[in-house]
Length: 452
Image (cartoon, rainbow, N blue to C red):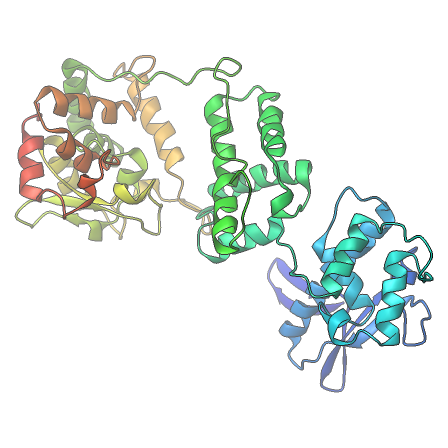
């Protein structure tokens, strides 16, 4: 084992590599029962694998060794399992590698002893022309196909890797945890299956397993949404033709078998006035955040994650710029927008700009170094304060400000397209996608109609 990195509490080592001269080599003992998969030039089974990694760079050697080891693990696991339940492209590639050949070599070097020997091993031969040839196992058939030049099938792990490579994966620790839980559940059902072999039945089993845990319909949808975009990426990027499309598209999730979502009630004008009055009296960072929420209609994470360079108080129309930043991502593309500051939101922004640091609300930043920003932590504290002070009843909370805000705009006769632009909601029609939208002055005029 070679030490790659050692600092503080972290130590990183690489197995199976050793140096001879300036060149790094791979050395690993073959798992018991798998020696026959690896043969030398004379056809003798090998108990130890030893070959050059063809690099003088230690990190590159570790990377190449890891790739070899993963393929070997897949090959050995498939061989020892001895079934056709899991056809693995990685195992097929490792079988070719163990024989010292590459995909397509069966066409390029058809009449060599190495190719003939491998074909005999995969088919159970050799056979005379008049003899019956039993059908190879599904795994051996795939290995033969690759040997003869067939394209390597894409698997679910390939789909996940491509999705992450394109920058579409989780953006923070919490998102990564949700993604990993959903992915682990899928792997427990399908294994690292070839993508075109993933069926609707697998997707329905995925939902059924979640339903058996008595989770809400909304939670099931969140799990499904962790998987569906990955398959969308694979279908598009790998140019796959699935007969019925993405198997995770349009799944039926029964509301009757799951707990109903919590109803979010709006605030009355009197309740909203009382909240804003109490925030003025308390006059601290947490209350400024609540005041901003009450008169912008923005989502809670959008407000508590603001940075000071996204607040423009000296412009003709004071406003905030809601965009993705190092604190948090946004729900969708439509969420990126500029929102005028009026009423209590303007007062709160002015007060918040007096804090130290680059964040508008440093109180919501993680206290420990290395921890990621989590808007849910702020949500719990703010909701508790409103409950404890009798400012919110059951069914009311921070998100109720957004419901209340759109009700106020609607009651004031503000057109739907202006409401959607202020709130960052997705427009329903095609024509709304053209042009730059309404000016800040126009949005401000609409919002001034609802200031209490």
